[in-house]
Length: 199
Image (tube, rainbow, N blue to C red; front, side, top):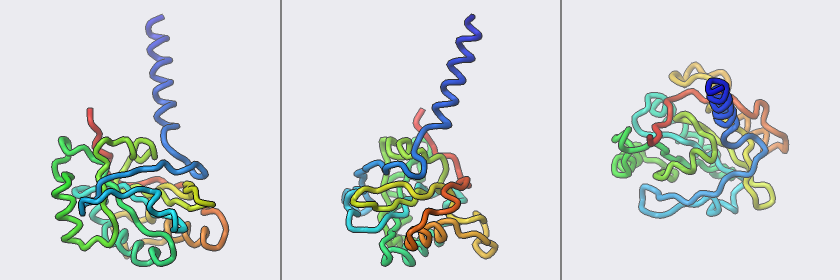
């Protein structure tokens, strides 16, 4: 009997984990987080934009580092078209001391980030979105004043070598939105480091 109950509980937990977070078509979750410049940045601050390239990323992850210049390029290419980048660091600093606000600020200055780099200190935002890796993209579209999720997943199909990329998922998804259609695919598998969560 106890074994059956335990199995049922584990199955329910697995179901909840699989179904946690947002999916394409869902309303985006509002957030208000501290930026490396000391200001507070909210999703609602971007109400005049067509959308947002929301990326959960961090300092030390090799995948985040490999994608860093591509994330910067996305902002430089698409901010003027209404799709700016906003980066959120979800890692717990006790587990990942390289992700403190001071080190985030140093990284942003060193790499000359042209976009906000926010700290999800409570870890509530990444959980609400369902991010699991760094980097993990949530492309949002502003539809009548409400942000909706249009695409979730990877930036492209080659995490470690930008020169070998053959499918630029985020760029294609934005092009689809600009043309009035839905991204296809709307989801891909995010490749990166596991988010460091408080125990």
